[in-house]
Image 1 (tube, rainbow, N blue to C red):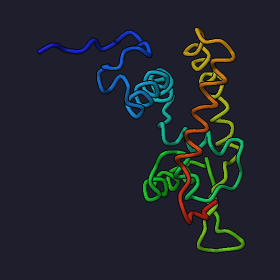
Image 2 (cartoon, rainbow, N blue to C red; image 1 turned 60 degrees about the vertical axis):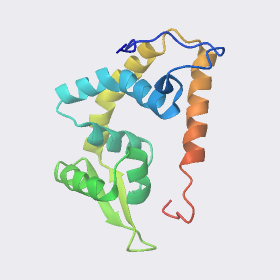
Image 3 (cartoon, rainbow, N blue to C red; image 1 turned 90 degrees about the vertical axis):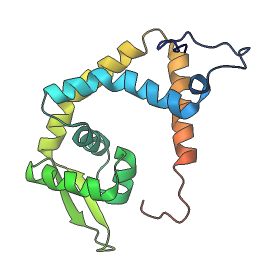
Length: 165
């Protein structure tokens, strides 16, 4: 049985018979995410910081007071898993959690000064590794990649009846 090349050359538009995964959006996004984030995740681990904690801190870094439902979607965790992580982060002094003043069933999460200082230590590393990963792309290509990804996320993240924002 022939095994596919683990690092295939990019396909041209003329190759209509590409192997399934080489043209499957979900696989391409997952593979790109893995390749782009692998080194940064290793650095987080070395610093004693988990990826979920990093994601929570990074999302809250320039957004205050997010409700848990929105935060869970942004950090790619289910609400029960996020709640457990938040309990640990609260104990570590990284975030606070408080009920909404308008609706006590809704809970808001904010980053603390300690959490902000911790995430600031890693932002430069994240940006440097991103620049390294995108070094062979032009500024226009980088802008296009990010615009298309943001657009895809916005279109797919719409949930009918979701008023958790």
